[in-house]
Length: 102
Image 1 (cartoon, rainbow, N blue to C red):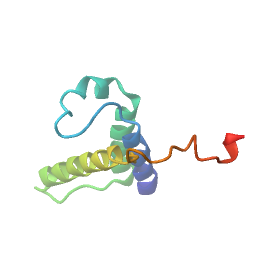
Image 2: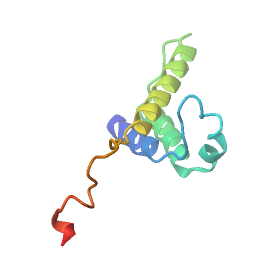
Image 3: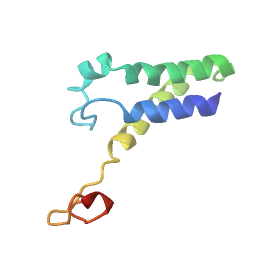
């Protein structure tokens, strides 16, 4: 179950809309609220906790909440940095003469 929740978190975080860089995350809140991937991300975390039955040690609930929140934000941040930038002047894939070039 934990692997399923982890996988759902990875996929949902890659589908989140908008620019979620620290400077723009507050501007993206309306888009996040409307996005089904946001709800998938939350449900994956909650279902993973509820079905497995794990719970933090007495008095440490706030630490677990902060840790979970930071983990999700870190996953989202890393997923948004996955785009590869092509240097200016580099040949494009369309002009590379591959099988699609015909």
